[in-house]
Amino acid sequence: SVARAMANFGLEKLVLVRPAEGLLEDPQLLPMAREKARHIIEGAKVFDDLAEALKDVEIALGFSARFGKKRSDSVGLKEAARKIASEHGGGKIAGVFGSEDKGLSNADLEKCHWLAKIPTSPTLSSLNLSQAVMLFAYEIFMVSQESAEKPQKSRKAATVEEMEGFYGHLERVLDKIGFIEEENPARMMNAMRRIFSRRLPDPRDVSILRGMLSKVELTIKRAKEGKD
Image (tube, rainbow, N blue to C red; front, side):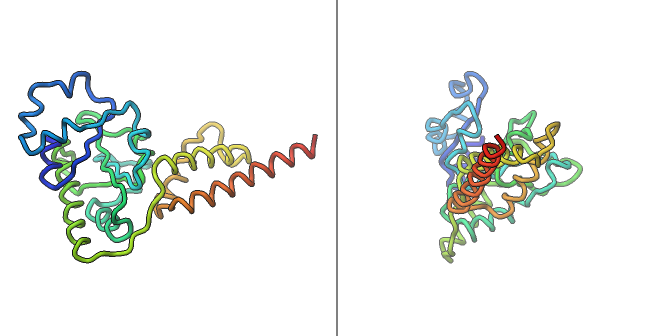
């Protein structure tokens, strides 16, 4: 059903992270996808880790129907699609969806640049997986059609791999200077991720930020050597 929804709106690349055992060998899979979408299933890539699956992606939209304090920084799907088209047209975009029963964990959502929300009736807020993929594919298709008619300047965003490297470096430095509370480092890093996700850094931005962090590390090292 997901493959067919993708084919309806011109999406070709399906990536599965830790799929159920034997899923791709299920004899019902290809008939359900219909002839025009079978190649999507046959060409699906499988990964054991979400970060590895997203490493070359510039903008990852994580979808969830559950929101709380840790998931308050969400953006509507239509707004996200239009922002991508106007600022990052031609970039590598991914819609990230969880399983039917559990959805995406907080750790999964940390790997995504934006938390995307599909507006629904409060009486039944959750969508099944293929419905959510269909709406994502539709919105991306519509803005891509509009962008083809009215080309706009775009800015390349840093990939997930580059951002994860930066976040790891940032956490290490913040820990060294005593900025992070030892009992709950994840809370501060979640806040940092939200800050940088509001304006997606480009590769040069990340290089400058990491150069700054390296300078801080060098200064700390020299200060310690001076004391010794």
